[in-house]
Length: 248
Image 1 (cartoon, rainbow, N blue to C red):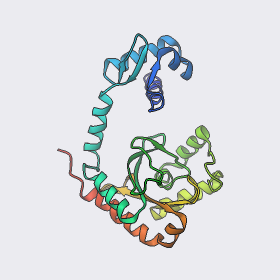
Image 2 (image 1 turned 90 degrees about the vertical axis):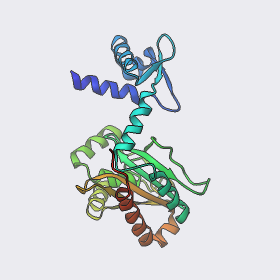
Image 3 (image 1 turned 60 degrees about the horizontal axis):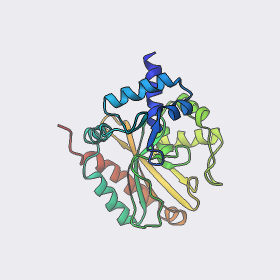
Image 4 (image 1 turned 180 degrees about the vertical axis):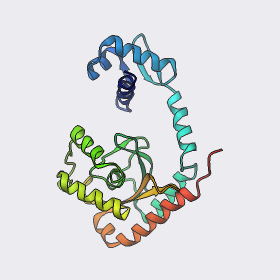
C-alpha cells in the first residue's frame, strides 16, 4: 500500500514540466487514470509539505521546497559550486558540448551542460536525456542489472531518434557490456544526426559510477580526436570528484 502510494506520488510530480507547469486535480486524475478523490488526497498532501503549491481551488504547480531539496542534493553530492565552471571551461577548450548526467531510476537527468557555440544542442539542467541512444545513457545503463534494463525496454521501448539509433536489444546489450568493461561509451549520430559523443563514468571512492561526463562534437572531429577526447574526459571526471568540497 505504501509503495503504491509512493509510486503514484512520483507519477504526479513527473507531470509538472516547463511545458505544463500547472495541473488541476481533474486533469491529473484523467491522465494517470486514478480516482479523483485519491488524486486530490495526493496533491493536497504534497502541497501541505511544500512540494506543490496551490494556485486556485483545484490547480497546483511545483512548490519551492523542490528547489531547497535540489540545493541539498547538489551540496551533498560529489559535485560542488565549481562543477559548472569546470564543465564550461572544458567546453570552451574543446569547442564542444560537455554534459554531466546521472541516473535517477527512470532515466538520465542532466546535472550541468555547457557549450561555446550557440548552434550546438544544449540540454537544460534537470531535463531527461535519451538513455539508449546517448553515450551518457549507455554508460550509466551499463552499471544496471540486465533485468532492470529489460524492464526499462519493456516499459519505454527503444524508439529511433535518427537512422543510426540502436533499436535492437542484442546490439544494445553488447554496447552496454563493452561500456561496463571499458568504462567508456561512444555513440555516432544516434541522438542527433552527424553528432557523436563519448562518455566516461564519474566514480566515487567505492568505484561506483554516480554520474557520467560526456563530450559531444561533430562526428568527423570526434573520430579524428577520439583518443584525445577520451583522455581529457577521464581526467576531468576524476578531477570533478577529487576537487569537490566535502559536505559538512
